[in-house]
Length: 165
Image (cartoon, rainbow, N blue to C red; front, side):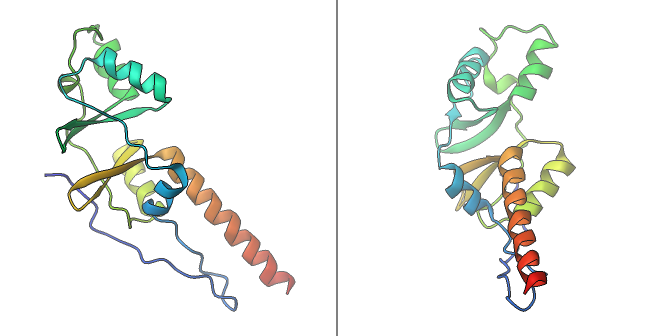
């Protein structure tokens, strides 16, 4: 079973009278902003195959899929800790033997703040996005930070407008 976060946050609309609330970005908005590309690899592919795809796409993680089912996630961190440090061969080691198989996932309506909390708590940098049992995207810590920074910039502008009006 794919663990998903059960908490959701409804968006807050900025009130011209009360600038203390700001629109909270959701995972869906992050996916729209970054594009919907999801790069996957089968569990029987080699680590070298995964590294080549990650380098080609300039990404830090791949979702491991067996058919339509999420099997795990393989990241640069998995490579460093489970291949390089243990002296294993990238050419012959299958992804299934080194992937992270307990994958923490989120839904498209999850807030950026909640994603940041999950990533911080679990010490992870990538969250697959699941909707109706299907993988619909993946977000990285960089996507979340960018989203939160944008929210803060909007909030600051609204506070400045409120103070100056």
